[in-house]
Image: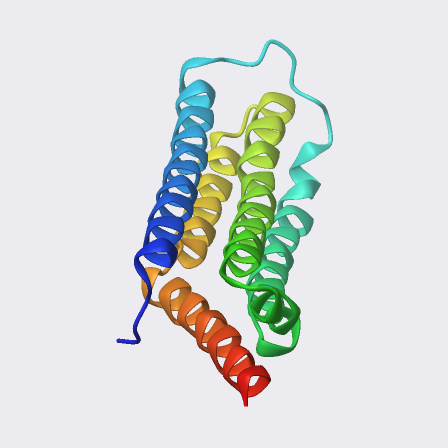
Length: 167
C-alpha cells in the first residue's frame, strides 16, 4: 500500500464511489432489459430471423474481445501516463472516463439482446446477450487497488518533480 494524502484519499473516495454507483446502475439496467423482454411479447416476428443467430453471437464475442482489449489499452501505462503527469485529479478523471466508456460498450450487448428479442420473439437473444453484458460489467468493475496505485503514482511523481525543482 502506497501513501496517499488526505486530499487525494478524499478525491479517490468520491470518484471511486461515483464510478461504482454508475457501474451498478448500468448492471441493473441490463437486468431490467431482460425482465422487460420476459414480460413483453412481440406482436410481429420478422421472417427470416433464424439466420441471425450465428452472426449475432459472433458479434457478441467480438464485442467482448473489443471491451477487454480496449480496457487493457486505455489503462496501459502509455495511455494513462499523461494523466498521471498532470496530477491526481486528471488520473482519476482518466480512470472514470475509461470505466464509463467500457460500461457503454458493455451495455450495447444488452440493448442488442432486447432489440433482437423484440424483432424475432426469441428470448434466447435477450438473456444470452444480457449475460454477456453482465460479464463485461464484472470485468470492468472498478478495482480500488488499481485506482489507489495510479493516484499514489501520480502524487509521488508530483512530489519528486517538486523536490527536483527545489534542488
